[in-house]
Length: 119
Image (tube, rainbow, N blue to C red):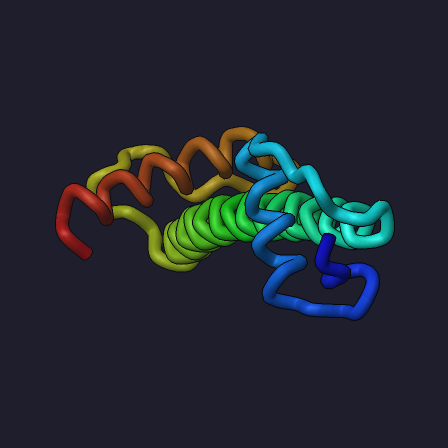
C-alpha cells in the first residue's frame, strides 16, 4: 500500500480520490488519513458549489429588485410630470389640496396620455 494524500499531502492523489468519492466510486486501499482528507476535500467542493449557487440566487433577486425599482422610478417621474403639466385633454381641473386620491387618479390619467402621445 502506497502512502499518499493525507499521509504525505499529495494533492493530485487527493483530488483523484475526491473525484472518485463524488462520483460514488469505491476508494479502497487507502489509509484512514488519506480517505479522511479526500472526504474533506469532496465536502468542501459541495459546500463551495452550494455557496456559489446561493450567490447566483441572490444576484438574480437583486436584479429583479433593480428592475422593479427602475419601473417604480419611471412611474413616480410620470406622476411628477403629470402634476407639473396640466393635461389639455382632461376636462377636470387640477385638484385642490387634500384630495390626494383624486389627484393620483388624474396624474395617472395624464401619464397615460403622455405615453399615448409619445412624450
